[in-house]
Length: 96
Image (cartoon, rainbow, N blue to C red; front, side):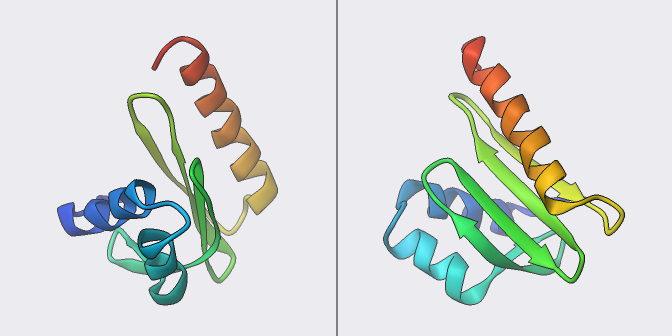
């Protein structure tokens, strides 16, 4: 999938303003990734999780990057979230 500049701007806005306007906007309007709308089920200063039916997205902030991942229907949301969070922990641990 491809994340458009407008979609990435919405993700960045949620992180720039955690707990207030940015997060409230994605929680109320959803998050668009790859042209598809995902309902935000978790949003905090580190992670944003979204679902669309049985598939979803997990976005995690590291020191220098945002990991934007998609999981298909065949993958359990908890497994996807755990995998991405562990990758983020590793990247943070090595300074990235």
